[in-house]
Amino acid sequence: MIYFLLFFEFFKIGLFAVGGGLVTIPFLFDLAAQYHWFTTTELTDMIAISQSTPGPIGVNMATYAGFKTAGISGAIVATLSLVLPAVIVIYFVQKILDRWQNNHYVSDVLSGIRPAVMALILFAGLDVAKTAVFDYKTAGLLAFLLICMSFYRKNVFIYIIISAGLGILFKI
Image (tube, rainbow, N blue to C red):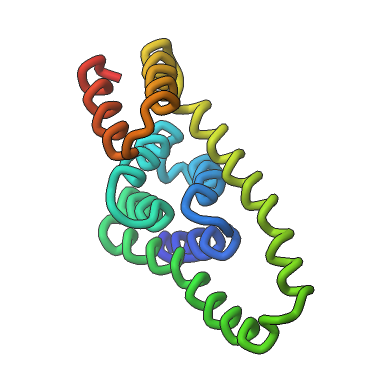
């Protein structure tokens, strides 16, 4: 039964999380509340790990959540069910766009989706901020990194290393 639930829930996430991995975050918060497969604190850790590891964040999070819920087989089910809708949709969209690529209505619809995707990403960011910044140390680290990033435009990997080091140093 757990594998069916994992498949169903992550298939839904894969189907409706248009815009990339960060858009999966609100869906995962709902999963945490509904099934108690993981806590919101663990979800925040999943986000940090998923952004620090190679690969798409949504896939990394599905793999982590599936593994946390039902081991290696749960990770496989969650990952494949998250990716499956995209494979199906891309196949059919490619067939449709080949036929209608010069139609201005299709172009207008695709342009109209952008604001909804931006709203989902903003909502996800606010949810992460609520759970990730929970004391003065993390708020101070966030402020320090934002100031550094605004004045010193370096590779994001450098800031990941710095924040990991400071997190270990200050036991955040």
